[in-house]
Image 1 (cartoon, rainbow, N blue to C red):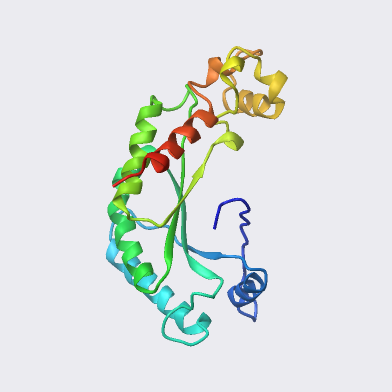
Image 2: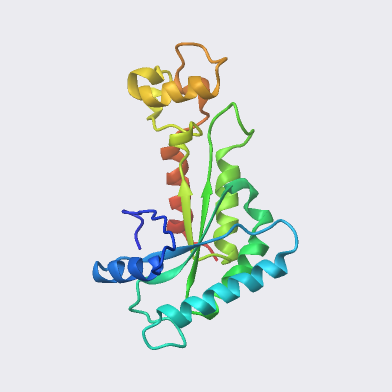
Length: 218
């Protein structure tokens, strides 16, 4: 999985097993499938973990070609905890992820989590180093196998711009983002620049995350 093409599919049980259909179709197209997990509760985690264990056991029984454990050639590669969280809050979730992944890994499956960052000055008081530190801590914890990082562009949490465009009017470059920002923050002036709203570009944050892998973590 290289993250180039990701498709989210919602399935409904209506007389047939939709998961089986998705897996068969994905297997024919050499695609990987991560089945969604329900959101973990903030309290009483043990019943939730027991539920996840039953889900994994049921899938292993139904979808494995030879029964017993998942086949490496199967399209099913793991499970996705779709409850997206702000990356700065990951330290509170590492323990939960470790417990979930101990279940999925025992069945030869990966655990994917979804997180996001934001560079909007009107939201959290944070810095680039804060996000890099949080990302490094999540990677070093080895509590998850795949990290899906959302850039926040679609919700106004971030914007793409070059350093030379910091004082450029957003509406001249990204009118869709400009419209969204004025909807979310009605008090904004009519003509806003990138530096008025964002403390850095999404591009810069991603480069900093990549440096964590380039330099390596231990």
